[in-house]
Amino acid sequence: MLADTGTALPTDDVYSRNYIGGEWVFPAAPYEFEIRNPADSTITAVVPLSSRNDVNRAIAAAQAIDKGEWADPERRVQLLMALLDRLNALEPELVKLQCGETGLSAEDSAAALRATLAVARALVFEVEGRADCRQQGASGHVLSWGLPLAEMLTSVFATLVRGMSVVVKPSLRGPLSPVAVALAASQVGFPPGSINVVQGTGVDVGAALIGSSLLDELHVHGNPGTLAQARRAEPRTGVPLRTLSAGGNVAIIYPEIDDRQISAMAAKAAVGLRIHSTGGPFGQTTVAVHDSVAPRALEALVSEVGVVSPAPLPSEPLRRVAMSRVQRLGADGGRTMVGRPIPDDIEHRMGWRMPPVVTDLGNAATAAGRLNSAGEPLGPVLTVVRWTSHDDLDQLFAGQRYRAGYASTWGEGFADDRITFGAVARSLSPLEIACVGTLPLAWAGL
Image 1 (tube, rainbow, N blue to C red):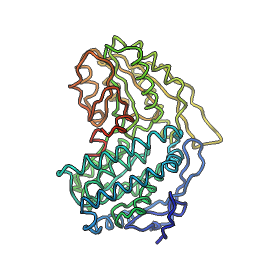
Image 2: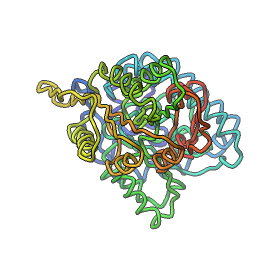
Image 3: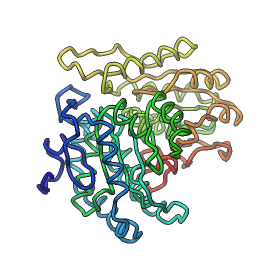
Image 4: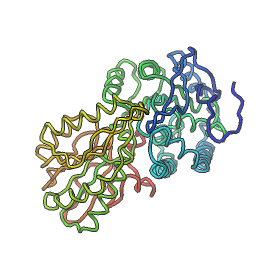
């Protein structure tokens, strides 16, 4: 067992272990993986590559948790709020950690952290107050690479609020934030077994969680292949599956909009593009603009997005997938308005960067098919579509990805009651809606 050193954030010794049953333990097999900063490829930590044996041990620890303290709603809320207070006090350290894990700038990392903590605080009151959400048992969580801290404090945190214990498999590309949250939880008195973190590959740890029949529920955030694997396993395991499709946040622009509002919309869209992880809840991938104001909106978007710096992605294969999607959109008739040559960096081989892209997909009749066939949104890519009626909007945003997303609305002239999103708040971006404590419940995996 690793002694509690009282350090603010994990040390190298902590990162090299799993957190199971309240103890920091080495995996069953001694294999390791280097975690690199996506911005410059520097090594930030070395984490273990675990196996099915470690997953089974973690599930057993989650099931064996002392039900007394954790089952008491008042005590559980006290612990959850103490964890959030602890994380809030660690903001400077967590901002730096998130920068190294995702490649975000310090400014964007701080904004994402504050919004994430606001989401988590809202969940304590929103979920705990619902009697239908209170349950016990062990929940498995397979996280994606995009914004790991946000994922840890949305779906995982919401599960803890309901009284369940968790087994978390972080992304191999983004495991540091979940480990930091687990350490903070141990420091404020979470009972052993309430949070368990098992690091490793999707082939080993992810597949073990997806294929386990010992869990009471399973949450999977990932690429289409991982989601498909989880859906195939559900009938065999009998474990209820909850998934969150990435990339569902949009802005909808109505015809009666002035130039000041257009400028504000474009500026917020650029922020969403900088926080480019479509796996997290704060990025924005699509702007649906009424055809009558499309030229003005496109001009403003091109101006704002054109100065956004190239965004780091965690691997060259992911960048190829992102660029391939842009190419497919263009081949289907999309018009690239912003886009620069890819800045290869030989010295920083892991710092694969992708320039921001704005693609005009044209009218809604053709854009809906293009959006669906192009695949999962990745990287700093903003698609613009033109609409003229509510039927166009219904067609564009009929997919599950958008039902799990958020829409900001701009301008006047139409009611938006036919738009089926988790939440709609005029002129508030995804970051802002989180900070005021309103959010789509789909972000919590409910």
